[in-house]
Amino acid sequence: MFEIKENFALKNFNTFGINVKTKYFVPCSSESDITEFLNIHKNMDLPLMILGGGSNVLFTGDYDGYILHPNIKGIEIVNETNDEIEVRVGAGEDWDEFVEFCVEKSWGGVENLSLIPGNVGTCPIQNIGAYGVEVKDVVTKVEAIEIDTQKRVQYINEECEFGYRDSIFKRKLKGKLIITYVTFLLKKQPKFKLNYGNLNEQLKVLGEVNLNNIRQAVITIRESKLPKPEETGNAGSFFKNPIIKKGKADRLKEKWPEIPIYIINENLVKIPAGWLIEKAGFKSKQMGNAGVHDKQALVLINRGNATGEEIIHLARDIQKAIIILFDIELEMEVNII
Ligand SMILES: Cc1cc2nc3c(=O)[nH]c(=O)nc-3n(C[C@H](O)[C@H](O)[C@H](O)COP(=O)(O)OP(=O)(O)OC[C@H]3O[C@@H](n4cnc5c(N)ncnc54)[C@H](O)[C@@H]3O)c2cc1C
Image (cartoon, rainbow, N blue to C red):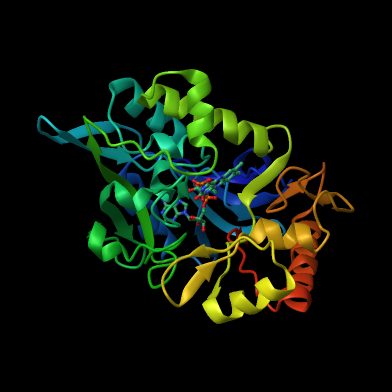
C-alpha cells in the first residue's frame, strides 16, 4: 500500500539541492503499488512524473502534479554458471550500493561505474557510463510498467537501442514507462578495463589490480574532480560531449591546435564539452547563485540557494557562447523539469 504525501519538499530529492515542492509525492515499493496508483491517477487531471535519486534533473519551479518515486528494493540471483552470474535488481536500489555489493561478491562488470549517484532503475535510461564502461555492457533486461495500460513489459538489451548517454527510454518511450527491475550479467573472472583517463596510474598507487582496488581508484579520481552533491549541489555533467563531423573537427583544429578529438568512426568525432566551456572562459564563472565548477567546467553548481532558473540561465549563456566561438550546439544531459 502506498501513501500520497502532499506539498512535499524536494530539496533532498534532487542533487542540485533546489528548494522546490511537489503537490503530491508517491513512493511505491512494489509493482502492485505502482499499478494501483496508476489506476487512480488515470482519472485525475494533474500530470505525473517519475523521480529516482534526482541526480539528473533540474527543477525550475514547484511541480504541480504527482511525482511517483519507484522504491522497489532487492537483489535476486536469477541465473548462475561457473563464469557468470545474472542478477535482477529492484529499481529503487541505490546504484553505488549495488556496485559495492557486486565488488564485495567479486562479480565484475560495474566496478568502473563506482560512485555514480542515482538509482538502479534509472541506469539504463541514459546508459550511464564512466571510465570506458557503459551500463549497456552488462544490462540483459529492463522490466517496466506501461503508464497508459498498466501492463508489465520487458526489453532485452538489443531492444533498448542503447547509445552514448542514450536509449529508447529517453526517446520513443520517454514518459511512457516506469522501470521496475533491471537485470545484469556479471563475470566471475572479469576482464578489467583500465585504459581510460588516469585509472591505470591511480591503480599503481593501490598495488594489486583487483575489483576492490579498481573501485577505490575510480572513487579517488572522481572525488578529486567532482563536487560532492551533499556539499555543493550539482547534477554531474550538465551537457553531453558533442559529436561532430570529422571535417568540421579538422577545421576547428586549424584554429585551436590543442583541441582534444576522440574518433568515433571514419566520419564522426567526439569533443569534450568541458574543454569547449573552459576555452570559452566559463570555468569557475559565477552568475548569482549559479556557477561553473572550478575543477570541471562541464559541471554547473548551486553556490547556495540557487533557483533552477538561475542555473538554466547560466546554461543557456554557455550554449550561446559555444555556438558563437565553435559553431557547436551543446545538448543538455540533465532533464529540465
Ligand atoms: C556528482 C554526479 C556525478 C555523475 N556522474 C555521472 C557519470 O559519471 N556518468 C553518467 O552517466 N551519469 C552521471 N551522473 C548523472 C546521474 O547520476 C545518472 O544519470 C543517474 O542514472 C540518474 O539516476 P537518478 O535515479 O538520480 O535519476 P533521476 O534524476 O531521478 O531521473 C532522471 C530521469 O529518469 C526518469 N526516471 C527516473 N527513474 C525512473 C524509472 N524508474 N522509470 C522511468 N523513468 C525514470 C526521470 O523522470 C528523469 O527524467 C552524475 C550525477 C552527479 C550528481
